[in-house]
Image (cartoon, rainbow over all chains, first blue to last red; front, side, top):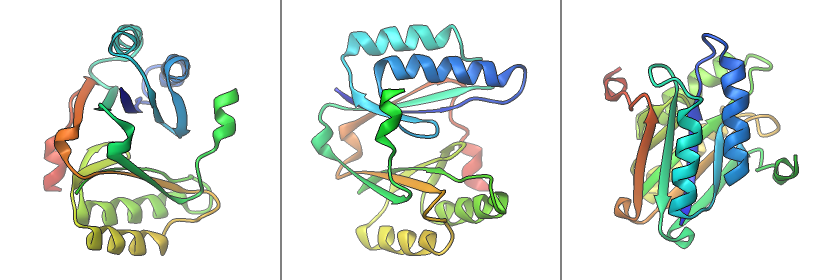
Amino acid sequence: MYVILVYDISSEENGQRVLNKTFKICKKYLSHIQNSVFEGEISESKIMKLHYELNDVIRENIDSVIIFKSRNEKWLDKEMWGIKEDKTNNFI
Amino acid sequence: MYVILVYDISSEENGQRVLNKTFKICKKYLSHIQNSVFEGEISESKIMKLHYELNDVIRENIDSVIIFKSRNEKWLDKEMWGIKEDKTNNFI
């Protein structure tokens, strides 16, 4: 399935460390398309693994992750305004 | 149509002012669900107005806006991990 993931990590209490870890985990499963936005094709079982890994890192009282799931990427059109997505990010 | 909008506004060169303006414009058309994420039902003509207004504000070399469009919200499942969406934001 195709998903869009966006996170909002608070800068409080070692936020930068949490942010870095969150970024790294998401990067294992999805493509980075904007500051705190990832997208990609992923199976339900991988989503469960991703959820499990993120649960260990994000703080449920101050951080949040939203995941939008679509059975088919074709059902979504994507437009980018301003600077365009930086695909080089995928190779970090 | 149902859209998800995410922005990434650089803090450079009066970034806070740009961020505030971007937020206000998006808020006129969509519901705020996370730091820099909005969603909602909106017509194509309203999207064009939104695009037009944002174009006046965002800096095309350093800011970006991504808009995902789906003809039907039912085609997307949404999950929230960590803190849940703050619907009170809609009443600001």
